[in-house]
Image 1 (tube, rainbow, N blue to C red):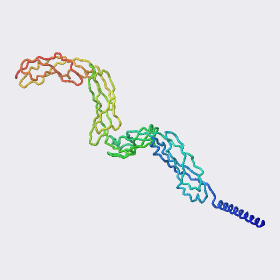
Image 2 (image 1 turned 180 degrees about the horizontal axis):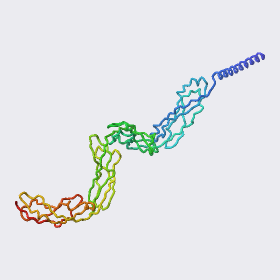
Image 3 (image 1 turned 180 degrees about the vertical axis):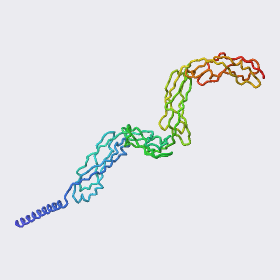
Image 4 (image 1 turned 90 degrees about the horizontal axis):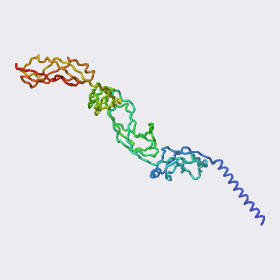
Length: 405
């Protein structure tokens, strides 16, 4: 009986040993034929989740950069070979962020089968910057590049809409200097309309990302005309101080290049009126130019320098020995010897102009309009001289005897 038990125990031991050997051999064969390996997958895009939740809290993700990660997994060769790696997804969740600041967020990886182990994620976390969400109304600006064809100029332009809403982080919006578009006009020669994309720019003219613009398109209407030269005409108002006269008015530049509609003929551009009232010394005055509708400065000149020279008024006497008569009625006569009378004419003006006058240039006359035959006392007059005023004539009248023919 005991002998049979010993035999049975030995058989059981052999069976167990055989099983162990079989398992070891199976493990060996499997390990040799289908070993476990590490596999790396690079540049897996990271999805940003719950950005709308972040925005609903009045916050915004600062960077628009696309994040990616690398992962390392471990598994059997057969499992790795059959791994649908395109199903592997990476994401970060913004829903837990409550305030402005810098955050390091854990990366969630899904799509890896259970038989495959996730060994490493690189980087292990993704840093994001969050700012308070802000919005502003901004005027739309347009800047132009390029030169128009010869003989043409940009007269005017308009943009629609004239204002837009920009939205983004508080710090980013502080750096926005201009919202608008840069338009190339080098190929334009007629009125045209251009559709442009609006962008945000900093003080150096660099485009700023991370700014939403609503609407982000605008329509720019260009008005282009022909160039020509126009002289500058100085307008004045008022009189200089008593005892002074305007000697000369000059302007620099004295002509400019203008652009005008093809149906507009312009030869001169006037200045705004310059006040001369009470002026008693030379002066230089900056005066803005007045451009009619449809006319613009082609060379950018919109003002000029006006130089006014004043001179003190003096008086000078002139002896005139012959008097003329005018408007003697038909049928009347007078003895011309009555007109040989010496009179003194006192004129006032600037020295230079008075020096150009001689007695022979002065015409002293008696106006006989409405005077009939008989003796008459007639006031004496002189023909006016530009820039010169009459102080007096001595004697101021002449005695004449007018007769009928």
